[in-house]
Length: 373
Image (cartoon, rainbow, N blue to C red; front, top):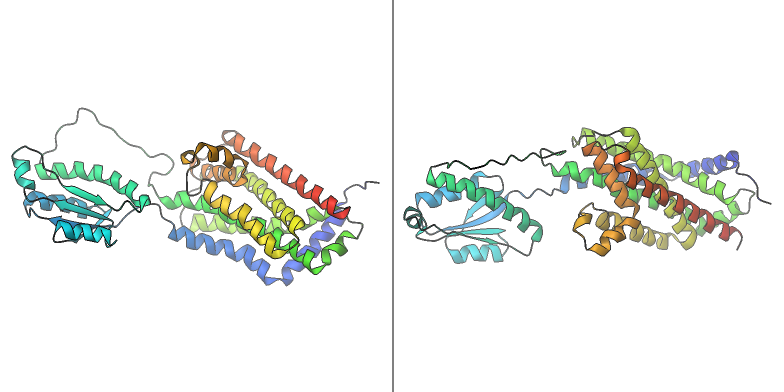
């Protein structure tokens, strides 16, 4: 006979889990200290803005025009100019990675300008580091325009004027983009490991078999097991939010209730996934490996945290749709920076809801099979 769900039994399992957490300082430190440390370290270290690029310069013309060109590079905060002495020296600096770029100005640079033939200067870029090449190549266009005006001492009238306006991140501060994404990565690692390691430890110690032998139902065990770690996850999320706002100055222009709903769905999904891993593996070492493979790597590489999903091959653009981290990444960044409404992110919330329900049902069914083999 199937007995009804009883909250008192679930709360008893939850109280037991709370006592276990309080007796285990590692779990508390992992849940509350690790997210703060990761946000502080990675939020400071990860910066997508390419600045201070070492530029090795060979000026064989030594003219006023060539010096103005070099000054244009030096006056920007994008490049750090260092002398090379010769074209071969500039090439060696780039090859030996003493510089990321090289500027070679030929001997007749100013004479060609004055004669109206059009002067040429060569820029060498280290193509091995493609994360630098793209931004630096973009900087060259604006520097070329500014240098042309300085060398000619003339600002020609433009037939049209383009005015660029950056929406949502007017300062182009990469930390405003990185830290909401880091929130997703940190919560994914935290939530999946909390339940995967803790429940697997009970399987190894034999205490889970004792719990399953009591009248408590599998669903009551699941709710009781997940509830304390859900509270820890929410506390960790609050710490991360405070650090993002107070330390890094990341704006939050969205609705906190909408963001909170996304957090609850995401936490529920990954807590249930960790529980499912622990039920299937029953070994802490194996559970950790599965947790990292299914939680850490996808949330880092395939969620859009580092690489935009739209830039991935078509197969992976569709493959990422089965990853909850991809959808929560959209919710986190859109609520932080864009102030998107719930309806604007309806697809992401629908996907997260589906994954949350599916993962809880899968963990429950697997629990039942282990209780009644």
